[in-house]
Amino acid sequence: MRTLTTFAGILCILIVLLDAFQTVILPRRAAGRLRLTRIFYIATWVPWRAVAMSITHPRKRETILSFYGPLSLIFLLIVWACGMVFGFSLIYYSLGNPFNDSSRQLSYFSDLYVSGTNFFTLGLGDVTPHGQIARVLCTLEAGTGFGFLAVVMGYFPVLYGAFSRREVSISLLDARAGSPPTAAELMRRHSFEGSEVELSTLLTEWERWSAELLESHISYTLLCYYRSQHTNQSWVGALTAILDTSALLIAGVRGHEARQAQLTFAMARHALVDLAQVFSLTPAQNVPDRLPPERYERLYSLLCQSGVSVCRDGQSYERLRNLRALYEGYAASLSDHLCMPLPPWIAEQPHKDNWLAVAKVRKQAESEGAGIEPHNLAEVIDQHHEF
Image (cartoon, rainbow, N blue to C red; front, side, top):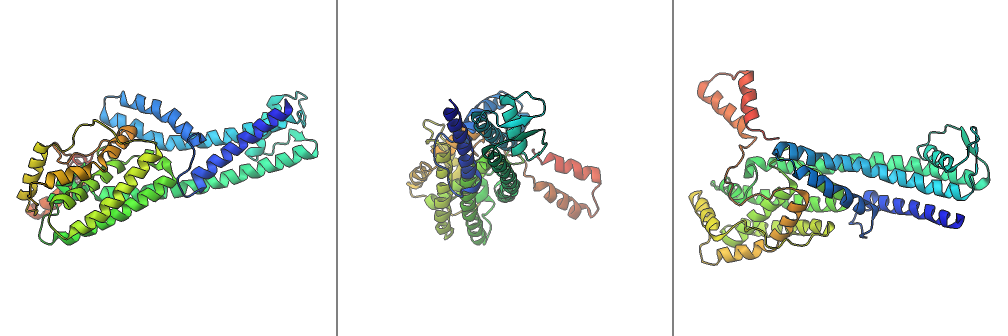
């Protein structure tokens, strides 16, 4: 029985250490379907999502969903710590309570108590070990707990640094593609003279953003659950909007920026597919068509009115549909799993862009030649923000 208990304790410790190593330190996708972190997120995200989606108010629902990412990180650390403490306590118990307890009430609780004080390096001293093996184990556990604390302290800055870099580009997309971002609005706002260079630069930036997203979110899958500050923004929606724009440029728009669109499309699709596979998601089937023929005709008319040079050879819609088939299924699966809506191709009722508050203030200043009252400025900004 003691041998079995020792084996169980060692196994518990190894499972936690391996899982923490793969989640925090290993800079690549962690392997294994029975990992502790994977089981934890499956067991907690499904009920959390169900509760959040039962809330009808969109802002309150988004707030509840946004709590999950940070809270799950805290609870995951608690699970790791409890697993380590429990594992060492089983080893102590298998040694036959090798401690001197001042209360003279030795039991498994004493083993669990000593394990907790050693792991968190409390050093109370009311229960002391006797025997060489127990002393070595206490020292080893104290060192493990100290190392665990150091890794956790280094984990948070890396995690939030990657999250911040991701959100900067998403926020910048608001003024360039609308709220939420759409391919039609992105093309319309880049239809001025000389916009080809600016559009190519934008696609180049998003090619790099997609590569950084893939690298950071494969290494730290937890970041996928972190949501943007605004309800009409998300990393899934932004990535899909860029894929829509790149596919449209490749399939039906004349211009040299189509070369950069191919590179951006390849990198963005790579990120989308790999991140879907992290959650073991398959392409969604029988989902509503985001761009049926009648919507494409409207898109074509909108682009023509904006001055975009659109191909009209009768095969442009078919080419675009073939490109969409390469990524829309994965995007729909991620959207459903993470509760992050996909943007439409053409916004029916778009939110007012956040940046337009500044544009309105400037327009009033130029027309009236006078300053704006502070309370009026606050009203303008509040009208254009959707948190």
